Image (cartoon, rainbow, N blue to C red; front, side, top):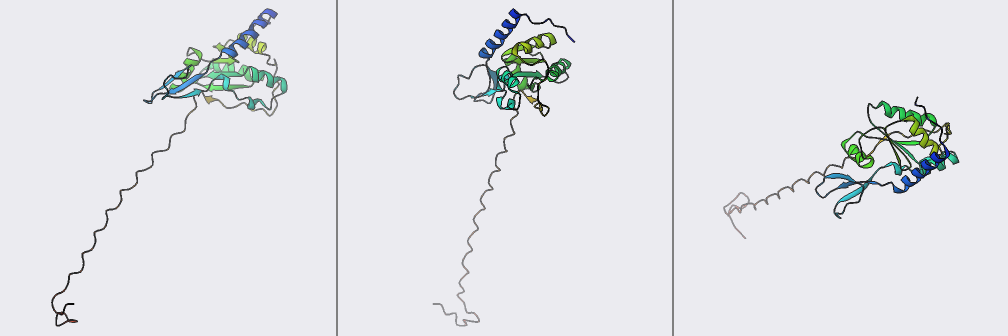
Amino acid sequence: MNMHKPLTAPLLATLLMTLACASVQAQGVYRIVGPDGKVTFSDRPPADANANAQPARTANETPAIANGALPYELRQVANRFPVTLYTGNDCPPCTSARNLLTSRGVPFTERTVSSNEDIAAFQRLSGGTGLPFGTIGGQQLAGFSEGEWVQYLDAAGYPKQSALPRNYRQPAPTPLVAVKAAEPAAAASAPAPAAPSRARPPAPVNDGPSPSNPAGIRF
C-alpha cells in the first residue's frame, strides 16, 4: 500500500480549485464520420457540414440519474465530481485502481479501451495511451498512485469509508466508444417481374367440311 501525507489546508484548497477549474475546462471528444466514410476523433466539431459528428462518450457523461439512490451527501459529490476509470485488458494497475474505488465506496463509471476506435478516442481524450487513467470531475489522473488518487478523492469530498447502500450495484464496464448495432442488410432486390405469357393464337379456322358441318359452310 502506498503511503501518503495528510492534506494540509493550502494543498486542499489547491486541489479543490484544480478540480473545479478542470471541470469547467473539460472538453468533449467528437466521433466524426466524413463523406468518404473515414472515422476520426477530435475535440472540435467538424468544419465540413456534410460530415456526421457525434459526441464520443467521455467522463463527463456519467448520468446523474444513476446516482439517485445514493445518500444525499454522496450524491452531491458524485454529481459534482463524477469519477470515471479507463481500463484495459491484462492491466494489474487497473485492477488496483478499481479495488481502491470499490473498497472506499466511490460510485464510478468504468470505460474499457480495447478496440481501435476506443484507442483513438482515448488518445484524443487523455493525450496518451497509458492505463489506467482516471478522472475526478475534470481532473485527470494518469497511471495509478494510491496516494495521489486518495488525495484527490479527499479533496473532492468523497467519504473515507463506504457510504453506499447495501443494495447498490456497480454498473458493468462498457466500451469507451459505443458499439453500434450492425445495420440491417439491404433488402433483397425484388425478383424480376415474370415475362408476360404469350397470348395463345386463335384456333385455326377450319374451312373444310367436318362431321358437324359436312358441307363446309362458312358464315
